[in-house]
Amino acid sequence: MTKKLPNHRAEGPASAEPLLLGPSLGTSTALWDAVAPELAASHRVIRWDLPGHGGSPAGLIGPGATVGDLAALVLDLADDLGVERFSYAGVSLGGAVGLHLAVHHPERLSSLAVICSSSHFNGARPWEERAAAVRSGGHAAMAELAGSADARWFTPGFTVDRLVEDHREADPASYAACCDALAAFDVREQLGSVRVPTLLIAMDVLQWSRHYRC
Image (cartoon, rainbow, N blue to C red):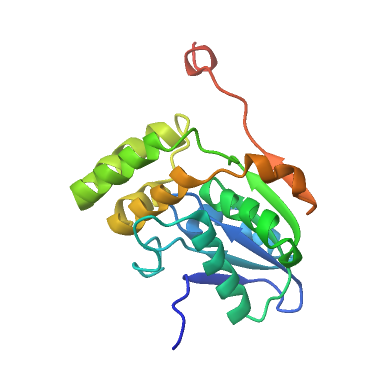
């Protein structure tokens, strides 16, 4: 039986070192549009979509999914492409996938970049509530989340319309399953075991009223 794989986009020299790029919840491979061409100058860049996001089919994961399930999809994709060892960079949920790989499958990683992510996403309750709301509200709930994505993700004047639209178009059941994965994720106790060369990237907490006061 053929395994169902996440949608992916590959660019850069086929002989170059592989670099897999993971998205955040509610986005697609478009998250990397601005930087992928630069990275592809020296790497074989492989971007992938979360289940039910972008070009990936729904049904790759279900209720109660874990970050480990998403990491397994990434490894299945790498295996299908003949990629044994690779560098990995991921944003938010995509970064959590990278941390899971570093903890549980370090032999597959040559390096890791974890961007605006965490070893634990502030407890299960907020994600369980969001998953329940999306399962109940379906596409209307996704449209509401997309409507607030501008304020949640972007500073004034820097909205990326494609990413807001990705949120609107995501499959509700798959999005909720990704929320389940975030709710359950916690590798705080395992971080000390990570031996993969790792870069952590985060932003300062902005006090918008101060930063944008005239």
